Amino acid sequence: MELTNNLAEVNQRINIAAKKASRSVDEITLITVTKTFPTSDIENLYQLGLRDFGENRDQEASKKVTNLPKDIRWHFQGQIQSNKLKSITSWASCIHSVDQLRYAQLISQLIGDAKMPIFIQVSLDKTSKNRAGVEPDELIKMATQVSELPGISMQGLMAVAPLDMAAELAFANLAKIREVFLTSFPTAKSLSIGMSGDYETAIEYGATHIRIGSSILGNRASIA
Image 1 (spheres, rainbow, N blue to C red):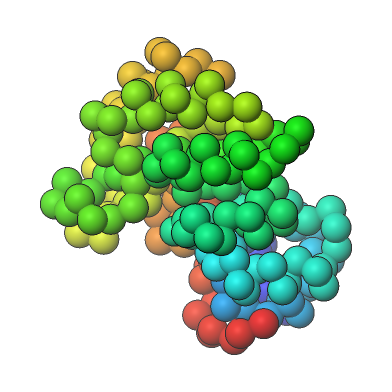
Image 2 (cartoon, rainbow, N blue to C red):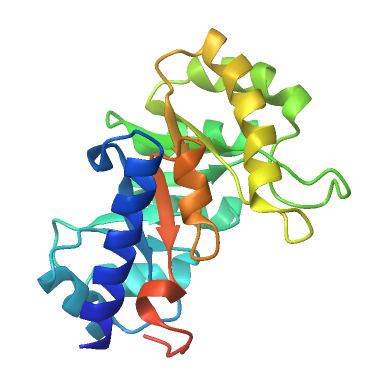
Protein backbone atom coordinates (compact mmCIF):
# COMPACT_ATOMS: atom_id res chain seq x y z
CA MET A 1 0.00 0.00 0.00
CA GLU A 2 2.88 2.37 0.80
CA LEU A 3 4.39 1.91 -2.66
CA THR A 4 0.98 2.40 -4.29
CA ASN A 5 0.35 5.63 -2.41
CA ASN A 6 3.85 6.97 -2.97
CA LEU A 7 3.71 6.24 -6.68
CA ALA A 8 0.29 7.88 -6.98
CA GLU A 9 1.58 11.01 -5.26
CA VAL A 10 4.67 11.19 -7.48
CA ASN A 11 2.59 10.73 -10.62
CA GLN A 12 0.21 13.45 -9.48
CA ARG A 13 3.11 15.84 -8.87
CA ILE A 14 4.59 15.00 -12.27
CA ASN A 15 1.26 15.79 -13.91
CA ILE A 16 0.94 19.09 -12.08
CA ALA A 17 4.53 20.09 -12.90
CA ALA A 18 4.08 19.16 -16.57
CA LYS A 19 0.85 21.14 -16.82
CA LYS A 20 2.49 24.14 -15.15
CA ALA A 21 5.33 23.96 -17.69
CA SER A 22 2.85 23.59 -20.60
CA ARG A 23 4.28 20.17 -21.38
CA SER A 24 2.72 16.79 -22.07
CA VAL A 25 3.29 14.20 -19.37
CA ASP A 26 3.91 11.73 -22.20
CA GLU A 27 7.24 13.47 -22.80
CA ILE A 28 8.50 12.40 -19.38
CA THR A 29 9.86 8.97 -18.50
CA LEU A 30 9.76 8.06 -14.82
CA ILE A 31 12.73 5.91 -13.85
CA THR A 32 12.35 4.36 -10.41
CA VAL A 33 15.77 4.11 -8.78
CA THR A 34 15.94 0.74 -7.04
CA LYS A 35 19.55 0.57 -5.86
CA THR A 36 19.79 -1.17 -2.43
CA PHE A 37 16.11 -2.21 -2.62
CA PRO A 38 15.02 -5.85 -2.91
CA THR A 39 13.60 -7.48 -6.01
CA SER A 40 10.27 -7.82 -4.20
CA ASP A 41 9.82 -4.03 -4.34
CA ILE A 42 10.59 -4.05 -8.05
CA GLU A 43 8.08 -6.87 -8.60
CA ASN A 44 5.42 -4.86 -6.76
CA LEU A 45 6.15 -1.74 -8.81
CA TYR A 46 6.11 -3.85 -11.98
CA GLN A 47 2.60 -5.00 -11.04
CA LEU A 48 1.67 -1.32 -10.70
CA GLY A 49 2.68 -0.82 -14.33
CA LEU A 50 6.25 0.50 -14.07
CA ARG A 51 8.82 -0.75 -16.56
CA ASP A 52 11.77 1.66 -16.21
CA PHE A 53 14.13 1.06 -13.30
CA GLY A 54 17.48 2.65 -12.45
CA GLU A 55 20.53 1.01 -10.88
CA ASN A 56 23.91 2.42 -9.85
CA ARG A 57 26.01 -0.67 -9.24
CA ASP A 58 26.62 -3.50 -11.67
CA GLN A 59 27.26 -6.09 -8.99
CA GLU A 60 23.83 -5.53 -7.49
CA ALA A 61 21.89 -4.94 -10.69
CA SER A 62 23.24 -7.92 -12.64
CA LYS A 63 21.85 -10.25 -9.95
CA LYS A 64 18.45 -8.57 -9.91
CA VAL A 65 18.02 -8.67 -13.68
CA THR A 66 18.12 -12.46 -13.86
CA ASN A 67 15.19 -12.77 -11.45
CA LEU A 68 12.86 -10.18 -12.95
CA PRO A 69 10.66 -9.87 -16.08
CA LYS A 70 12.51 -9.53 -19.37
CA ASP A 71 10.51 -6.52 -20.57
CA ILE A 72 11.92 -4.25 -17.84
CA ARG A 73 14.04 -1.39 -19.19
CA TRP A 74 17.13 -1.07 -16.99
CA HIS A 75 18.88 2.30 -16.80
CA PHE A 76 22.45 2.36 -15.51
CA GLN A 77 23.16 5.72 -13.90
CA GLY A 78 26.11 5.12 -11.60
CA GLN A 79 29.76 5.99 -11.89
CA ILE A 80 31.27 3.91 -14.67
CA GLN A 81 34.20 1.57 -14.15
CA SER A 82 35.86 0.17 -17.28
CA ASN A 83 36.07 -3.35 -15.89
CA LYS A 84 32.31 -3.39 -15.27
CA LEU A 85 31.19 -2.24 -18.71
CA LYS A 86 31.13 -5.70 -20.28
CA SER A 87 28.57 -6.76 -17.70
CA ILE A 88 26.67 -3.47 -17.78
CA THR A 89 26.21 -3.59 -21.55
CA SER A 90 24.81 -7.12 -21.21
CA TRP A 91 21.82 -6.03 -19.10
CA ALA A 92 21.37 -2.25 -19.35
CA SER A 93 18.83 -0.82 -21.78
CA CYS A 94 20.42 2.64 -21.49
CA ILE A 95 23.51 4.15 -19.85
CA HIS A 96 22.99 7.63 -18.40
CA SER A 97 26.43 8.43 -16.99
CA VAL A 98 28.98 8.47 -19.81
CA ASP A 99 31.43 11.25 -18.98
CA GLN A 100 34.61 10.10 -20.70
CA LEU A 101 35.27 9.29 -24.35
CA ARG A 102 37.05 6.06 -23.43
CA TYR A 103 33.88 4.72 -21.85
CA ALA A 104 31.87 5.42 -24.99
CA GLN A 105 34.58 3.78 -27.09
CA LEU A 106 34.50 0.67 -24.90
CA ILE A 107 30.71 0.51 -25.03
CA SER A 108 30.94 0.74 -28.82
CA GLN A 109 33.36 -2.18 -28.91
CA LEU A 110 31.29 -4.31 -26.54
CA ILE A 111 27.84 -3.75 -28.00
CA GLY A 112 28.53 -5.49 -31.31
CA ASP A 113 25.80 -5.06 -33.93
CA ALA A 114 23.32 -3.63 -31.44
CA LYS A 115 22.76 0.01 -30.46
CA MET A 116 23.24 1.27 -26.91
CA PRO A 117 21.40 4.47 -26.02
CA ILE A 118 23.60 6.71 -23.87
CA PHE A 119 23.46 10.11 -22.21
CA ILE A 120 26.54 12.28 -21.78
CA GLN A 121 26.83 13.38 -18.17
CA VAL A 122 27.66 17.06 -17.79
CA SER A 123 29.26 18.50 -14.67
CA LEU A 124 27.35 21.40 -13.12
CA ASP A 125 29.76 21.69 -10.20
CA LYS A 126 31.83 24.84 -10.52
CA THR A 127 33.85 24.22 -7.35
CA SER A 128 35.27 20.76 -7.97
CA LYS A 129 36.82 19.09 -11.00
CA ASN A 130 36.85 15.73 -9.23
CA ARG A 131 33.15 14.94 -9.52
CA ALA A 132 31.53 13.00 -12.32
CA GLY A 133 30.62 14.73 -15.56
CA VAL A 134 32.35 16.23 -18.56
CA GLU A 135 33.20 19.91 -18.21
CA PRO A 136 30.83 22.11 -20.25
CA ASP A 137 33.65 23.61 -22.32
CA GLU A 138 34.69 20.10 -23.40
CA LEU A 139 31.18 18.86 -24.18
CA ILE A 140 30.92 19.60 -27.91
CA LYS A 141 34.31 18.05 -28.65
CA MET A 142 33.48 14.89 -26.75
CA ALA A 143 29.95 14.64 -28.17
CA THR A 144 31.32 14.96 -31.70
CA GLN A 145 33.67 12.05 -31.10
CA VAL A 146 30.97 9.98 -29.41
CA SER A 147 28.50 10.60 -32.24
CA GLU A 148 30.91 9.01 -34.71
CA LEU A 149 31.16 5.71 -32.81
CA PRO A 150 29.29 2.67 -34.17
CA GLY A 151 26.78 1.09 -31.85
CA ILE A 152 26.17 4.28 -29.89
CA SER A 153 22.88 6.16 -29.92
CA MET A 154 23.46 9.51 -28.24
CA GLN A 155 20.19 10.47 -26.57
CA GLY A 156 21.14 13.77 -24.98
CA LEU A 157 22.49 15.09 -21.69
CA MET A 158 22.37 13.95 -18.09
CA ALA A 159 23.26 15.93 -14.98
CA VAL A 160 22.91 16.02 -11.21
CA ALA A 161 22.32 19.28 -9.36
CA PRO A 162 25.25 19.92 -6.97
CA LEU A 163 24.41 19.67 -3.28
CA ASP A 164 25.60 23.21 -2.62
CA MET A 165 23.58 24.80 -5.45
CA ALA A 166 19.85 25.41 -5.75
CA ALA A 167 18.32 23.06 -8.30
CA GLU A 168 16.74 25.96 -10.17
CA LEU A 169 20.12 27.62 -10.64
CA ALA A 170 21.81 24.36 -11.63
CA PHE A 171 19.15 23.48 -14.19
CA ALA A 172 19.08 27.03 -15.56
CA ASN A 173 22.83 26.73 -16.14
CA LEU A 174 22.28 23.39 -17.83
CA ALA A 175 19.59 24.88 -20.07
CA LYS A 176 22.16 27.30 -21.46
CA ILE A 177 24.65 24.49 -22.03
CA ARG A 178 21.97 22.39 -23.69
CA GLU A 179 20.91 25.21 -26.00
CA VAL A 180 24.42 25.34 -27.45
CA PHE A 181 24.65 21.54 -27.53
CA LEU A 182 21.42 21.20 -29.54
CA THR A 183 22.69 23.51 -32.28
CA SER A 184 25.29 20.83 -33.06
CA PHE A 185 23.25 17.74 -32.11
CA PRO A 186 19.58 18.59 -32.75
CA THR A 187 18.39 14.98 -32.54
CA ALA A 188 19.91 14.39 -29.07
CA LYS A 189 16.95 16.07 -27.35
CA SER A 190 16.57 13.92 -24.26
CA LEU A 191 17.45 15.34 -20.87
CA SER A 192 18.00 13.12 -17.83
CA ILE A 193 17.74 15.35 -14.77
CA GLY A 194 15.71 15.46 -11.61
CA MET A 195 15.61 13.26 -8.51
CA SER A 196 13.30 12.99 -5.50
CA GLY A 197 14.17 16.44 -4.19
CA ASP A 198 14.05 18.42 -7.42
CA TYR A 199 12.11 16.57 -10.13
CA GLU A 200 9.37 19.19 -10.38
CA THR A 201 11.98 21.87 -11.04
CA ALA A 202 13.64 19.52 -13.54
CA ILE A 203 10.38 19.16 -15.45
CA GLU A 204 10.13 22.94 -15.62
CA TYR A 205 13.56 22.98 -17.26
CA GLY A 206 12.78 20.31 -19.84
CA ALA A 207 13.56 16.96 -18.21
CA THR A 208 12.52 13.99 -20.34
CA HIS A 209 13.82 11.38 -17.89
CA ILE A 210 13.52 11.80 -14.12
CA ARG A 211 15.19 9.41 -11.67
CA ILE A 212 13.11 8.95 -8.51
CA GLY A 213 14.12 6.75 -5.59
CA SER A 214 13.13 7.69 -2.04
CA SER A 215 9.89 9.49 -2.96
CA ILE A 216 8.56 6.15 -4.20
CA LEU A 217 10.48 3.55 -2.21
CA GLY A 218 11.14 5.38 1.03
CA ASN A 219 14.46 5.66 2.82
CA ARG A 220 15.01 2.08 3.84
CA ALA A 221 18.06 0.36 2.36
CA SER A 222 17.55 -3.38 2.08
CA ILE A 223 20.03 -5.31 -0.05
CA ALA A 224 18.56 -7.54 -2.73
